[in-house]
Image 1: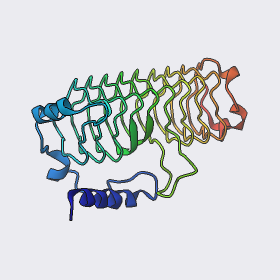
Image 2: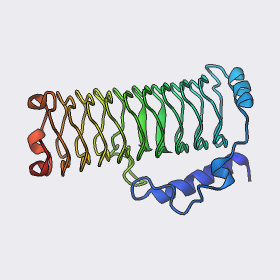
Image 3: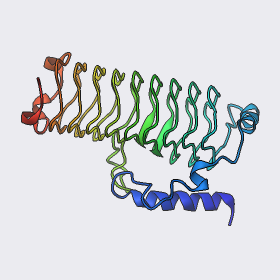
Image 4: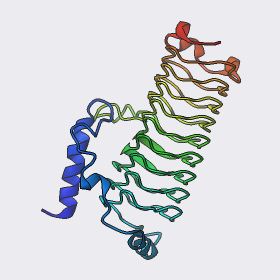
Length: 264
């Protein structure tokens, strides 16, 4: 069995558990060497990056890189599909255009990292730190439960479910209980995204789509909602205190459970 075939088989097996949302962790031992160890050093990663070019980006598919300090590295366009990066330090790293589909980044530190136009499909990023990170234009269908994105940007990013292709279940971003204070989400697609109990205090949601999003228990205190589309969004016990531009929000009257919204 070739390494590529084996990796593909592993990815398919993991994705098979996502028929309900994005639970790839069910039944897995997250303390196993495969999830917590590294098979390369920072110096070896740097050597691989040095050999990369625009036409041949660094390919780190399936590599075990958990726990490494890769802070500040230029991983532009790098292929990190199904890589293990749990508790890896990527603070200030450049990951523009990187492919992180099915990657594991549990408790990873991406503070101040640049992930413009990156692909994060079925990525596992629970409790990851992305404070000040730039994910402008990224495709994010990742599990970011409990993650911190304080002051980060997801402007023009696509986090919503593509209803034309949901053969593996509802694949969209999950930001349950995430800290999204002062998040720049201008013109972001957050349709059907799970934002239950998330903190969106002071977030800029100008022009964003929250269609059919789950906002139960979310805190939108002081958020800017000019041209934000609320059609079908579930507002059960959500806090919307002193919002900016609520009179200019779209379809707010078509949100669900608006009578259960906390306004003061």
